[in-house]
Image (cartoon, rainbow, N blue to C red; front, side, top):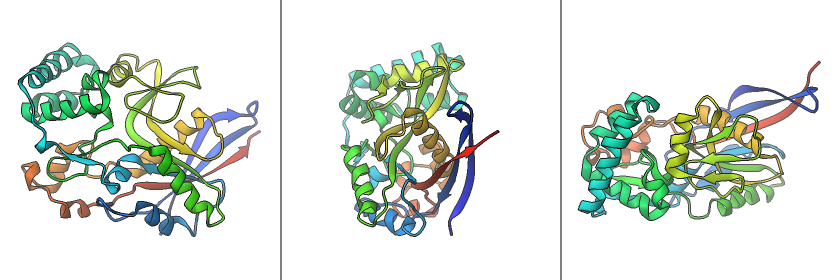
Amino acid sequence: MVKGIHYHNHSKERKNRFRIVLKLYRRSFNYWYPGTNAIRQIVSSYKKVIDSGDFLIVSEKALAIAYGNICDEDLIKDDIFTRAITMFLNRCIFAFLLRKFFREKTIHLLIKTPSKSMAAHKKLALKYGGFLHFIKPISEAGIDTKNLPYHYVALPLRDPQAIAKLIHDEFLRRGKYINVLIIDSDRSLKLKGINNLVISTRSSSIRSVIDLGGIGYLLSRILRRHVRVYPTPIAYEGANIGLPLMLKLSKAAIKVMGEGFGKDAYDMLQRLGKKDFNDVTWLDMRRIRHYPAVLIKARLIKVG
């Protein structure tokens, strides 16, 4: 059964004569294990309700897992230098000097995470994202620990634009010209009054999205009164819609995609009733409904 949700964008278009109304549909999927043909599942789920011009919003993390783009951080050997720098950043700089800018839960995570695990995670972030992502306090370099068992993490897609095109072309072969947007829950920020530039905290294949890594994350906290926060658009294939609408679609979709087992790996432990990540298995991933792909129908409504 398709679930419909209305979302109204109150910004007016065409000299205040029109507004965009978004209608969202979501269907639950089985967990996308590595090797899952995610595109086939998306097509099978939405082919009867999707129309030309519709928007299909897909989670990058779910795609990354399906494509096997994951890493076992338990196999990463940390070193004394990385561990020392990590502890200094997390427990001195982030947790204390910037306490007023971070949520209390974030600070708690920075302090309670074992130094060995955090150092391995930072070492991986340095490899995939460089220094700007090494200094990001959480979700470094677009690497995600949520909704995965043991010490596995999801890495950013190697070529998200190519995957967006594959999904687009699969529907095109069925006579439907749709728009495909791949997004990530990691935050991006748009300065109020500036529509064609977005600062992100991770990489993106969209030109107007500028990746500043940890600096972007700090700016999102320090300048929170002067920016609007959105999920990060990663790749897009379809009609030219402009960055502002892309951001609105991302924000609307992420609300109905949900958080899976929670906002972080520790939420997952609590939800599953486990005490250690080694106790979390692949089979546990089936214990919650997943919504990695959302369909959005957009239309202009005349006002006044």
